[in-house]
Length: 86
Image (cartoon, rainbow, N blue to C red; front, side, top):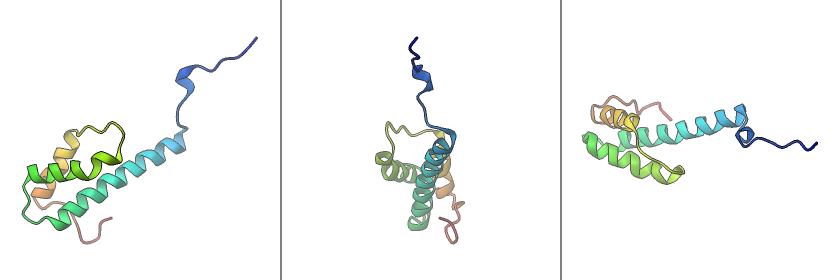
């Protein structure tokens, strides 16, 4: 009898999965903080566009979600700390 692997068994192990997520969070965090630091008085729409421009090529199959709008709104409102972040 020959054992065959199920296709659903092909996946990242948990430590690798966590590293991928941590790396993705860092990319997002660095972009948001950099835009907040360098863009005083920016509108939410401008911040949204800048976040997307900075991170879209860093991810496979990237699509902006509502979380990106949340960070853009926070940048425009001056709510992102820039003095001790990332």
